[in-house]
Amino acid sequence: LGSLPVALFYSLFVDYYVSSLTGAVKE
Image (tube, rainbow, N blue to C red; front, side, top):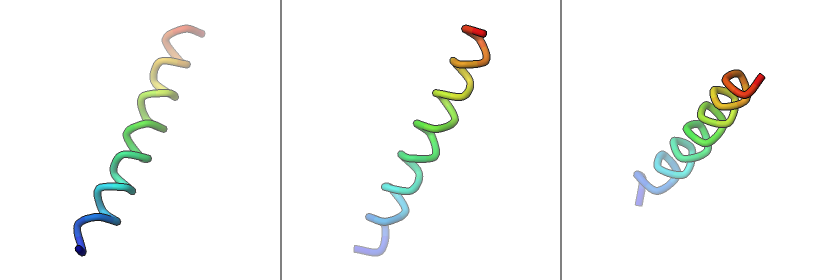
């Protein structure tokens, strides 16, 4: 139960990191 918020936060963090990373590569 306690790991669910952590997994959600981690997925959001990874999505943001990857989007910023790919954005830098495209730019």
